[in-house]
Length: 139
Image (cartoon, rainbow, N blue to C red; front, side):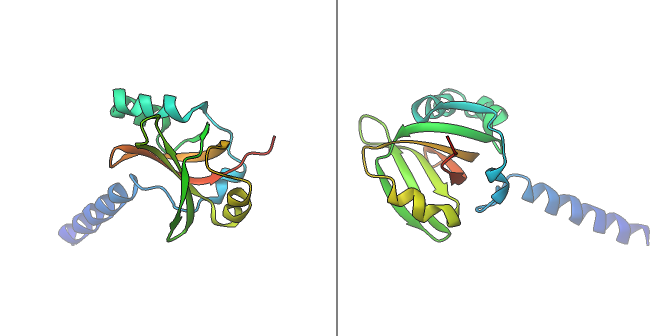
């Protein structure tokens, strides 16, 4: 009996630990979230390039507001994403849009257009920063 309880507890702990490093792709709490930081796409990318571990402690899972020049868009399984490149054309940030906001954001966005977004920071992946549940904040 004791071994069964221990086994169940260990499985529950493992499942919980596995879920803590994931953000929801579509988290509507962003609509009311207050950003903990406001910074440029370039500064956020620089923070992750300089020290990803420190940047994760500061930004991961938190609502942040970023501004930058949109380089392009990409269709995603959950909707769409805005892409931001550095001055050399390398991808530095991908901002996955909240589904029900994506159409309005995309219709108001053109390449080389400056955009401000509020998103949850998902950290660095494949050499660029990933943001989730992005919306255009109300002015």
